[in-house]
Image 1 (cartoon, one colour):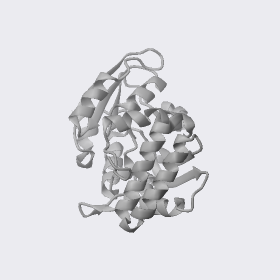
Image 2 (cartoon, helix red, strand yellow):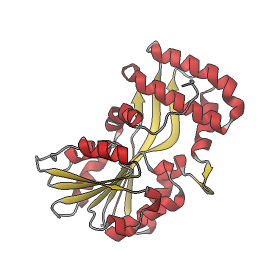
Image 3 (tube, rainbow, N blue to C red):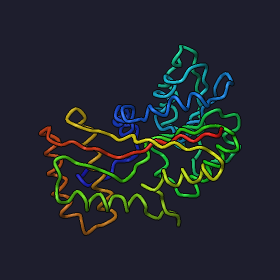
Image 4 (cartoon, rainbow, N blue to C red):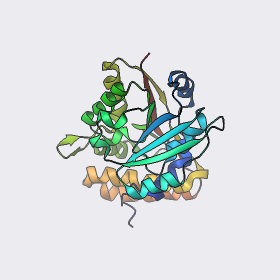
Length: 275
């Protein structure tokens, strides 16, 4: 693959980012979440866009009591992998069970969350449209359950040391994240604000906390893949950048290999609940 190719949302990519995701998640939201969980046993958790199941592997061990996770994703291969690697014990040693449901989150309806005591998602909201996020908020309101929606990109990226092309690449990437697809605009960096408004309109209290990736010399494989994807999306949005961006990418990859580059990628986590 060329240095400007965009990686697919594959099991390999999801596995590469799992440790960085776990380190970034806003643990400050866990106490208010635990305080608002229903008393039902088991707690039914619906994980939207579950991918390889990283959210479940992380969160189940931070929550007490029996849990039954339902993993929603449109990819049957990822669902099989997620189910086979799910943890089987909660924070207090209670059993955790798992089921899968193949569905496109864009088609989510309120009935799909019937019985849910918690809805979760990771790195999902910025891939959706405003209508999709509104539908998720409506479904959570109908289920009267809290939602923990994590690792939505903010569009803020800081690379150290800086390069003159950093700002231009970041702006093009953010425009790409907001591109139109199927006649509708993706939310990209506007996702958390859109979700905040959607849940607030339905009477929820919304808490938002930062959850940035902080990448350094111990995460070179992830940095290299992230850089390729970041620059490729920027060039897809602005083809006139391709020549300069190719040289830029080579400089940045060389800095990664030399252990000289540090990257902070902004994300936010959101908790919505009704009192």
